[in-house]
View 1: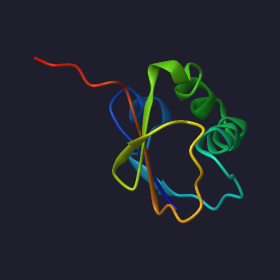
View 2: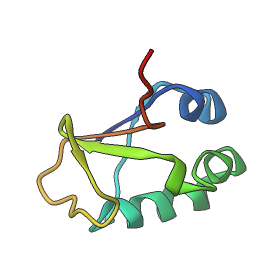
View 3: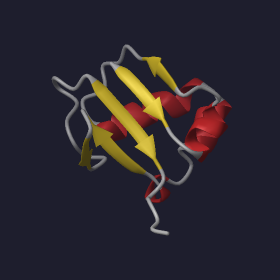
Length: 81
């Protein structure tokens, strides 16, 4: 699946997107897999309450299933201006 990172998440991980092969069943399991990879992922996902996730461009929750999902995007909450 294609995993995309935005704003400070992208800055901490160092790439805007990457292809991930995972056996994770939920977004939360995907985050666990990613944080186990390297310290930069652990830093980016240290506080998931400060993050939002979208699955195939639809806002979702961290307990959402990944079955059939082609794209996961992680980003901080949006603010108005």
